[in-house]
Each structure stands twice: as structure tokens, then as C-alpha cells.
Image (cartoon, rainbow, N blue to C red):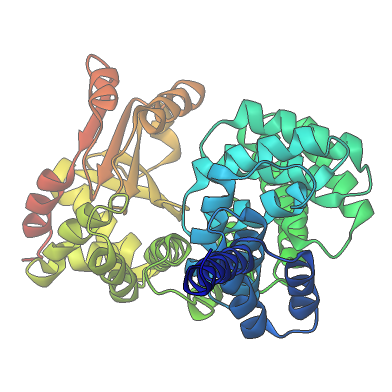
Length: 457
């Protein structure tokens, strides 16, 4: 071979070897380069870890261990979107053969799915984790939480119970079980679960809140109020507890105390249009209405209507009270104090039905009159001819229960006729019951006409 040919051959061999070396350097990653990334993450050098992982990936895009560490470094560096992309890549492609710690990875991926409102995918991860770590209570608990959010209470209960069996000292599982049992109206078992949770962790105020609701449903209103006052200590449950306490006090006819609870619930509101705030304002309006503070009641209901015009019957309440602006009789009937109200009712009974008042007394709903039809000089001598008239001042429809109770009273006392006067209307059931009985129902429109007879415009 000539010297020139030898030189050419040697040149070709050198070029080939150089190309091979470059290829090997670019495509074969030293394990030390991967091994160094976890150390960088542990030391808080997140950007250096990302740079190192990207370098590995540039040489071998299918190195999913590098993708995992890149995602982890991004997650630690508060770059959840980039971390999410890398973790999904790993989940879709990686073979978990020990290089990637699968349980830790799945937990982080589940957390990212939840962060980006992909709860169905998060649930799949937690269900897989319950298989990978069968003795880990937290995986069962988090799977149960997602199932509960989906409305699958039965399956959620099963996973909460598994979590409780794995860790019997975890109060959260007992709380969740008690909450689900309460919603299922299984109050006895709910009470047991919540009380167990309180024994484990007396500072978990959610338990007092739901236990208070259990006591309310079982009619132990005094016990409910005490529990709800404990729940008020929690900033998270303070407003909810105040609304529940106010409801209990309303049921106990402690209207002033109920109003105070609802006022406090409005004052601590963090979100002016939250459901708790709307309920607080709505019921506060009812308390004001019962105390004849109609203008203040309207102020609360108008705030509710502005936030949600379809909330309960707030639209109807505002509509009914609009008449206050034009009808002096209705205004006095609804807003006057007890003494003024009873005098007005005596005039209405006389002007409308010639009922001579013999005895009048205030009631929770308004007032009640015992009367005779026409003039009577001696009330006791006409005992068998006594009529009874009940006056209701409320915007709520009068149901048949009111009329039935009046009929029972008439029968037991021997009253010959009964009247129900209302600033609202009567239900069809109430009207049907009164038919063919000595009962007279006086709805709002007829009551309005009697104001003129009584001397009111």
C-alpha cells in the first residue's frame, strides 16, 4: 500500500473512532450523573437539579428516571405545571423497576391531579396506592374523601372504615364516618363515631359542629347549643356553628338570642355571598320579623335577594312586604307593638264580624280573642256562645295544622265558632278542612278590606 493510501485509511479510522466516541458520550449516561440529582434536590438546589436532569434527557429522552427527577425538582421549585407534565410522562411510559420510588411518585402525582381539578385521575392513583401500601391509612382516607366528593357515600364509608381499622387512633376517620352517618340520618351511630373522635382529639372542632347537628335533630336543643359554642372556637367552623346555634335557639323560641347568633354569623363572614352568609341573613330577617322589626328584616332579605334571587322564599317575602309602602292598615298590623296590635285586632273583629271582645291575650303568632257575637252584658252568662278568634301576623302561608288545632280547642272548650285572621294566605288543605265546619278563614285580601271598616286606609 502506498504511503498516501495508508494516510487516507488511518484518517478514516480516526474519524470513525471519534464519531463513535461522541455517540457513546451523548447516548450513554453515567450513573453518577443521575445519582447526583436527588442530592441536589435534597440540598435545595432545585434549578441545578433541573439543569442536570434536562442534560440527561437531551442525551436520552427515554430516561424516565431523569423525567421523574426533573418533575420533582420543578415541584420543589414551585413550578407545578412543569412538574405535572413530567409526572404524566413518567406515569404513561415508565416501568417501575426500582429506579423510581413508585408509592412516593404516585402520591405526588395524585396531589397534582387534585391541584388541577382532575379528581377522577387522582382517585385512580389513591386506589392504586391502597394496593401498593395496604397498611397505609392515609391512602384509604384520601380515596374516601374523593369518593365522598363524587357523592358515592357508600364506597366512601368503606374506605373511611378501612382507614379507621388500620389506624384506630386517627380521629379524622371517625369524624368522616360520623359526618356520613349524620347525613344518612343514622344519628345514634353518628353520635358514637363523633364522640370517639373527640376522645382521641378534643381540639378537632369539626366534631363539635356535627355532634351539635346530631343533638339538634334529636331535639336536645340545649345540648346542641353547648356543642356548637365549642365549635365556634374554630375559625373554619365559626360561622357555620353560629348559624346552627341560631337555628337551635329559634326552635327553642329564644328569638333574641337567635338574632344575636345570626348577627355574629353575618359579622364574621369571609365571603359575603357564601351559602352560610345567606342563611344567616335570611334567618336573621325572620328573627327581626318575629320581633316586629320589619324594616331591619327587609334589609337582610334584600341583601340575600341581591346575592341570589332564588334563595328559599326571599322573593315572596319581599313582595308581600311591599304593601307596607301603600297600605297603612297592613303596616300597623305587622309592625305595631303588642298592645297596639291587640287594640287593632279588637277593632277588626268588631267591624268585620260584630265580635265583642271579652278577653284578649298575646300569643307567639299574634294574639287570641274570646268574644261574643253582638252585644253581651255578662260574659259568664253566655259561656256556651263564645267564639274564638286567632290573629296571625306573618308572611308564611297558614297550613292546615293551625286550623286543626283551633278545631280541637273549640271542641274541648265548647266554643261555637272559630276565626283565623292572617296577613298571608291559607293552604288548600287548610281551606278544605275548614269547609262544612264552624270555622271562618280570613286571608290577607279580606283582612285588608276590614282595615277600612275599622277606620284605616
